[in-house]
Length: 254
Image (cartoon, rainbow, N blue to C red; front, top):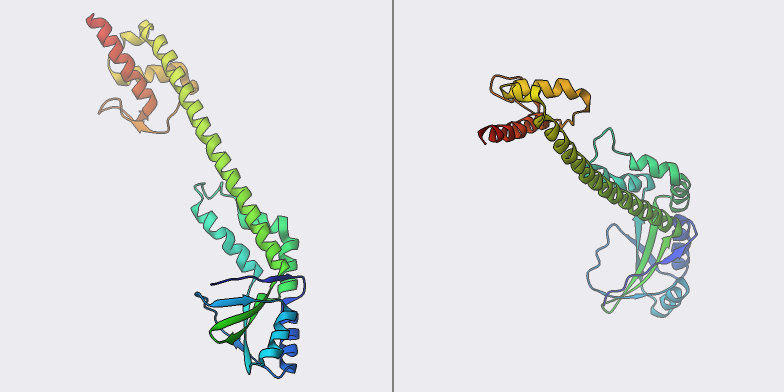
């Protein structure tokens, strides 16, 4: 069975570590610091400090292990937003700097975590006994507060991103509906326009429509030639003229 739990503390973690080490040493027990911590599936018993020290006197081990969890708040904040900014679909000019936004809003939380953690956000002490591990651990409330603020901020950003995405999708549908309405309106007008019908060739008809309606014409941002010898024109304009020309051609046959 594997259990992991830490006691949250308001105390400065490095100071609390030194106090705990001093207390353990006075009991004639050596403290060996671990450079790494791998927890698979040991039998771990979690105790508070008083319980741990009482057990220490009962078991009288020759040594205990101590592990420090190192933490640099500024690096943690930068790392928290690096993935979101890389995955953002917005252009670089439109992309918000989430790191700067968070720092501006929560600088006091970051600075408090720096003051309280001082490079270490938690520590844990282990006694090895007959295949079991007895553990006493503390984690900084300042670290927890910063983590909570980061998670809350990221959730809010994600919710806003989803809202923007949904609004853009709705706007796209609205634009497409307006474009269809505009397409149908212009098609009806041009089918009944004698000057348009008198012109021959898609290029001339495209130039006529462009000159007649000017800036009010919908622009797709894509371009194609109405015929191989013509200059490039807006894709939507060419498609409109082609459709109307086909209708007029059918009318003439009938």
